[in-house]
Length: 279
Image (cartoon, rainbow, N blue to C red):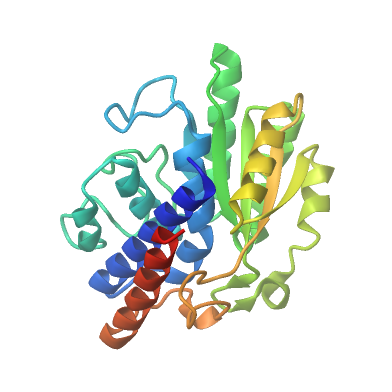
């Protein structure tokens, strides 16, 4: 899939995020939009050994959304990849829906790990990677974390174990949009320098632009060549990416757009999608 096709997919996924959060009147659009291009690349390029018709196949590559509140992006990506009907995105957070506020591995097709309590998802990903090593399985494990999430101590306990066990089948991606619910990450509890911290736990570290598919391709290809170490990709991103009035605004961390804002966001995204079709 070429760069333009990936951009089209990402645009549709962003429309799904905005529509589902608006329908639910709740959710986390900012961090979902910042993670969209990463998820698009993962599910349409990187995760080769997956099958929407057989989401639990034993040898599949695994993905864990450790920043589980970005579920709208995860669901919109899974829907676009064919795991379920995109129309179901409009049932987000409704009673009886299999698309709840955080991912549920028991109810949602394609979800490998329930997540939402920040810091815990990456520990599960490390366990999956260890399991693959013990069983001599070839699948790879990917985990997406927020830069605010890495303020949790459990993240670094997991990183210590991953580095110690030399889990070169594990790739951790940090969605580095620099904003969390209460402000910038520096103001709340500064995690910088993120790269040096992962290096201290014996990770191979790669820097990438979270919104440039060439940069993401180079990063994930480099990760596949690493032996004897897990990899951390520090992906610099923009919170709210793709919706101009949400970009770099901490206020859009956990607020749903009203009807007027929804209309404005969708018009902007559809216009961007039409422009991509002209390329």
